[in-house]
Structure formats: C-alpha cells, structure tokens
Length: 108
Image 1 (cartoon, rainbow, N blue to C red):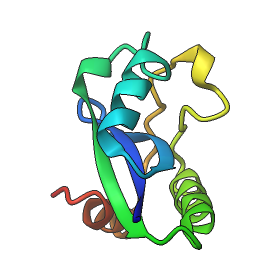
Image 2: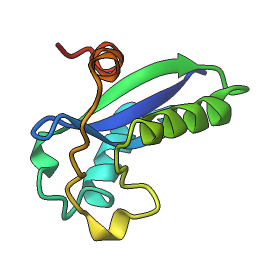
Image 3: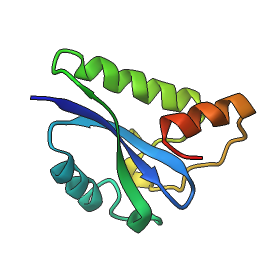
C-alpha cells in the first residue's frame, strides 16, 4: 500500500504548517482538525496537500526530507510546537526561492 507525504497548508497566509506521512489522507486530516489545528486561528482555511506518494521503505526518509526542506526555507512548522498554535511568521524570500515554493505548492 502506498504512503503519502503531505503538508497542511494555510491558504490565508500562503504558508505550509505541518509535514507528515500517512496511508489514509482523509482520516489523518480529520485527526489534525481535532488536534493539531483545533485552536489554530485559520483552521477553516487549511488544506492538506500531497507532496508525493512513496513506498513503505522510503516513507520515513521522505517525510524527514520534506520537513527539513520546508524548515530550511524558513517556515515555522507546527511540529514540536503544536500546543502554541501560532500563526507562522512571514519571511522574505528571494525570487528563486519564491519560484521553487510556487512550483512545490502548485501556486502562482
């Protein structure tokens, strides 16, 4: 069975919030809405975006890759800080970084 690397994405601030892995996308989103996003200010505008589909053998490695990649771009993910439910900070990005983000998140 395939695994999915996904991101919770805030459509108001246009920022990723969380990176995770699951076999069951719908159930995981419901779980996040009841826990991670329960008190998050923009919770109604958060969507789950699939970053990639991976095998069971690579799921942990690819989740770590995407988590590290998004953190390296300067986003304040909710992982390890979930209880604070803060709106992520906005960071300035170069034109190249904006292009990479737009491609990664299928945004213009």
